Length: 488
Image (cartoon, rainbow, N blue to C red; front, side, top):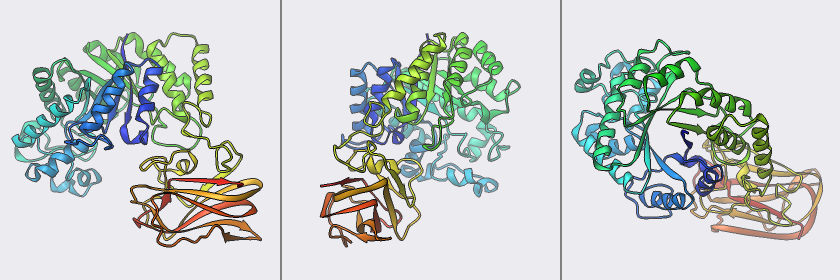
């Protein structure tokens, strides 16, 4: 039976990493692959969002739940590459003039370092060992040649045969092979016992069905056999190339990616038949591991993650079993349920999802701090927030509308504790007599409060209420953490 992992970026969990670990334990996954842990950061603050102290806390909790933690690590690029570039400016990658003004060329500046630089490799070694010493169970590597331009100093160009590289094509395979094998040898020698893997996206090295891709075959063949090479191509990796890769390498895995993992809106796009069907194709190839990547174990993502976890465990169960899993998880995603983004349902709160109402806003962050955070029952410094886009708005608003008028006499607003986007000037307004009218001793100017503000006023009848913000601590966006509305 293959090892089974759920895969996610830490920031996508919006602080709910224990829910992620618990979800993996609930569905009997071997472990979780988490990118953005940054266990190599020299931090001692256990409340930090990432870093060594945080990573240790997460690992301890996961191990108590019987879940392994696999640390996502960019061998060149991402947080790790940026750290080395900041620490060693002289080790930054050389980007050729013909590629400097391309999107990937621009992104590479300050993120990619020269792997021919001995100081950069010494720093990378320190980072790997420091992360390993947080108690993690293994690493999931990527060399970032997909997202960036490789180094083109004279030594690297000669070493990796990279002169023909373009922004998207002709990525030098030896760049990935040498960096991966260097890390495998280091860890096998200095921290033996860790589970090591490296992932590659097939579509970056050819076109479906990839059977004639010499680069894919070379990567599959030449990566250190102590590492599991995990191949990905979305939710539907072509069977012919999967069979070819599995026949050429014993230590192989496959990584499935939900097409909806980056978004919140719209219906569930990937259906259970898609996931189960792909697992049934891959299972006979006897992969060493299977991974499923999504957003977070909440709401509609939870359904597909649970189905994937069950299908990775045994795809040959009846179709009825997977329908049962789908129904079971959907029940638990109801507001206040185990897999709901709504954590707390306050009795009497007319803004609660338990009440029939519509919530709208002027704009929202497209990834983490969306309108959902306004009434999710979470009043904490760095999660469960509503924030606008970073477009420097002159004002922002969030509105709650009921199908029929409500009696309202009290409003509570939670302002971000760290103050970074704390609302300074704002007003609470109800719609009365055909116009918006302020209530509860608002507008507020130069708000000094971090945390809860409460506004009581003579009861009003209205079918809509809003908070309108005209100035915040950090002018590039606005928002609040929580909004509650009561009849008394």
